[in-house]
Image (cartoon, rainbow, N blue to C red; front, side, top):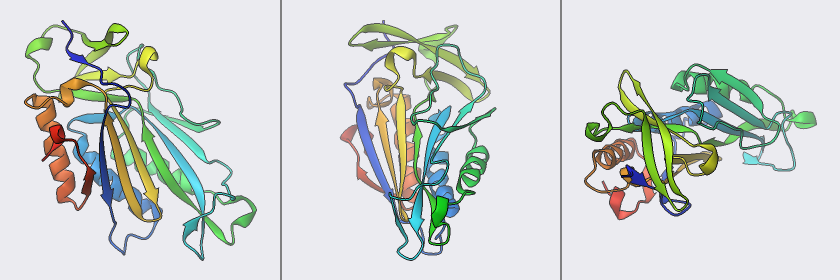
Length: 246
């Protein structure tokens, strides 16, 4: 018997928006605001890899100029120790690649700061680098009700191509299922996009597996509680399906 089923692509979508305080007028501060929200989700999901897109902002207009590019627009970071079947691949061409033991808040902030320490080609006098997208494809998602998983090392997922196995690993804080695998590279348990649009932050979250989208499960309850904590930080939940209402 499967532990969950995979939703039809692109899954259940949750969208959030945040307007940082006016004094938060630089990219690292906006990144910290985004990390505040992601930190609340860490009780449910934790990133295993992330893509970062750096662009160039016209200093006088304070607006991105897509005709100007930094030398290294694409960055990729991933954890160093993963189950063999879990896929971690860059989502953009020719990235600068980093590897860390854990994708903690601190390691992500150091990574973003390093990516911002470059110039906008020959327009450095009129343009400055800015981050515009953080995208998370590989994650581990926490199993809160472990009754059905005692002495098991795999998670069974029902898909339109049959049942597939995903690795389970116990960490100090509980039991976690890792994804994606090669057969479903774009359908991990969770897929997140953090978007910066000149001071407006957005998070789009796609939930692909039913265990976290089924009302009454401990996993769904934990996700709704995390969303409530993010809302308390000042984020607006602009699109929330009824199964995730807080």
